[in-house]
Image (cartoon, rainbow, N blue to C red; front, side, top):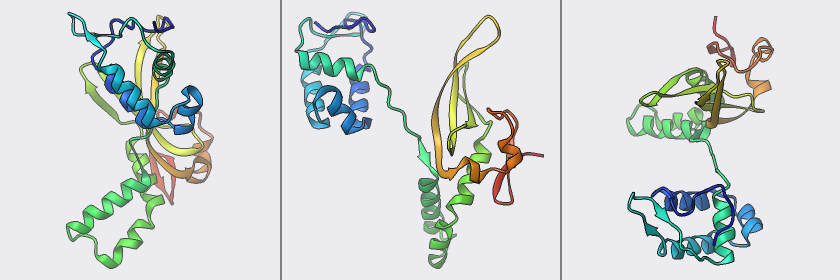
Length: 214
């Protein structure tokens, strides 16, 4: 029987196996081995074997078998306690994809390709300025707010409100959507860096650095 009280192991969502597979795929291999003594291949094999023993409840949820091994117990407890989040894309991928698209449509000449790639810094900053403070509607009543994060490197986080309290405050969960290799201290003008974050105002690209709009 699996230990722990954080989950109802006999009423799991039908997406639970997909979550386990995705977590193994995205986990750092050293962290996985240190936690459960398995590499990714061994963990996937163990999860596949366990999936065959899952049963479906009448309401469509899944149930673990009543008896599982200690190795399965350790693996499930670990995978269910971590959430691996990575950015959707970065400035390198953005510039590379954009260059290839322009080239394939005969907008960018072959001799201009390398020069375009060398402009990753300025394109990355411009992209961050455009995304900053955008609101994305992902479902009815659920919006993501994109905002330049207060990290060492310039990146854009996507934040969603998960709870509002009686004092009017909001509890938000955020993860990185877009990242660059540009230090915040080197990619922003001094007056912008002096502003308290999060920046609720808009920003723009000015003289090769980010600045407050207006």
